[in-house]
Length: 160
Image (tube, rainbow, N blue to C red; front, side, top):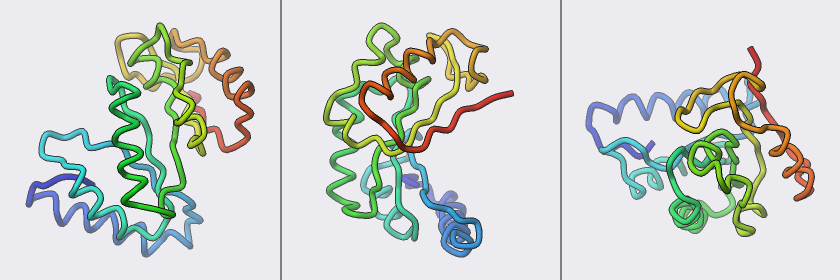
């Protein structure tokens, strides 16, 4: 959504139009987005395009982005998007990949924002998106972490 490239402008608009045209028929509750990752992406362009989407927005952490960097992005986006931002989608494998030594030390400010969980397996070196049990991530610890913080929302896990 944050691409500044002219060649991407029509592609992004097609995605937005599709979501808006079909979100009710497809019972789409959220649109998930990541912080800008492409070299031609910007926060400003992303905040210009996301409000055009007629669903609530959920923002997911990405690999190799520190908690501090993600929180800066997330809370800045929250200021821009207001009530359109439903919350944070915590991606367990992305957290594990970013810092497996302390991956379950989620800042309290982010814990309060979690509304969606993306759970798949992975490794310490690769954003693999393996089915649970096929990687090295201790996913049971993550599920117990969710129980500990009393998370009751949606969890989506990947299986083969």
